Length: 250
Image 1 (cartoon, rainbow, N blue to C red):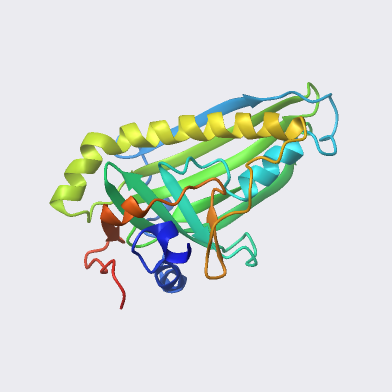
Image 2: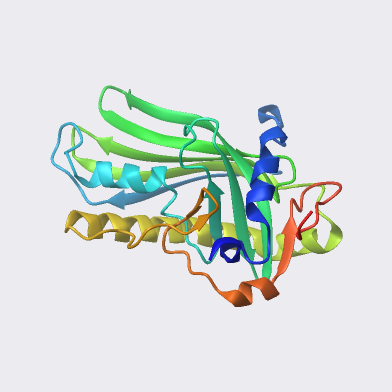
């Protein structure tokens, strides 16, 4: 299947080009109302009070979050090197948006592995948008076990805005549909993680099957389907760049 995973794009070449791309915003820019600042919490199956249980909800959820399996493939897919350390990992995201596929880079800039307030066991990671991304901002995905009660949560926190350098057509599409698609993405992430965790707890392999590959890179999530009709979509690489790169071969 190879390159068909990402339509007609030479995705591995575009992914390699992310290495020199900088983060496209600074934290001191982030404030309402120009930025969306959101937090979403999803309740996962409860464990017994105490540390995370071996092969329990928290561990399964951490695995799924680590591998980006919670992402709904009809909205966002990711390409990354599974052998690279999580911290500093570059990911090429394919945002699928009303017959348009946008290819945007992010970088993992934080990994969380700590106990907060003496009771909350937290693991997760965050990525920030790179130059050329459709958006600017940061998303943090965390799995939290409240060890005093056994409650397990999936927490997504983010700050974001559309990139100001989008061309007129892309900017109009973002204003009309971007926020709606963003909120649908977070709802679908929650639904998928709940579903896969419940399946894993009863011994099912969730999600089923090995992930698609592009050369030595993993395409996540593993249940992303390959459709040749994807090649008919409008493909845009780095839509937030002042000078956008072509989608075809070099």
